[in-house]
Length: 376
Image 1 (cartoon, rainbow, N blue to C red):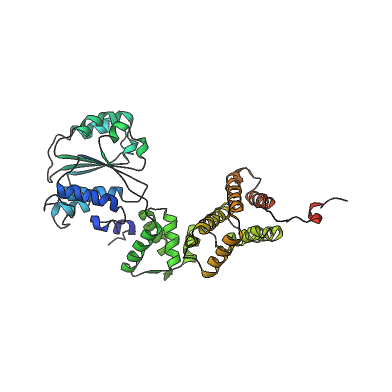
Image 2 (cartoon, rainbow, N blue to C red):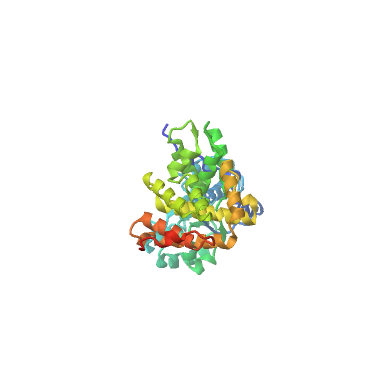
């Protein structure tokens, strides 16, 4: 049997399997329970949070042979065919590749026919915002008053692009991006089932890199597994993601806070010899400044998944660095990152950015001898 990627293998088959989105699942379950089923639903949200999956589960609940239910049996012919993607009364349409009005009219011409097998004929239109203006206009009347046997399930990552006339005809649900804890807990479950192990910090890094998308998290986990390690380590994940070791940006921040310009330039020379990615260095420094700022407000926001010595150094910086200086450094580094494109080379851009931050340091950091270099 061919290998199935984790994102497909672990696609939820019931509402109970969906990670997060309780605010939506509760409403949908009540709609099924009370028989108050709308004719058109719009699911929006970022990539990989469950829009298409929930739509398929709704189609399963509408057509399960045991009756309309939020807990389909998963055993009847209709449920199995929907899971396998071959149910004749579930039409999945990729609006990104069928944007023309002719495609929409062809779809509408078939709406009048009764379902062949199921209770309802379900049209699942993915990335619906990609339809043309003429396609939306052709869809309006049918979307407002469809036949009783028709249900529309629309999914989009960009609901702002949908006409208001479409939005007003649908029940709208926005799926939230998942937080790091939700993703980590699910990855632990997946790896246990797959008989694999990972360091807690490695899972945190994967969850952060996924940016709220469970599909991205599973895809990244697949990639980490392919690295061939017995245990997925934090160092392996950092190398895979192209992230720097926390030590490098943290050491630079410590030199900046200490107003030690010479140490800062020496560190940059060492990093250049290792072939560091200069933009990533600024990004990691910005990330650390953000964590320190949050830690000054709430100490537990510094994080609990770094090595102990890193956390202790971050706590020390949060005590030594005044909030106004921190905000100034953040802005300088943020602007410096944008200006890397215009620097003669990226290393020079990073050096000038950090020297600019150093120039605003309240301490006396340039000695009179250094300021008169080149004078006779």
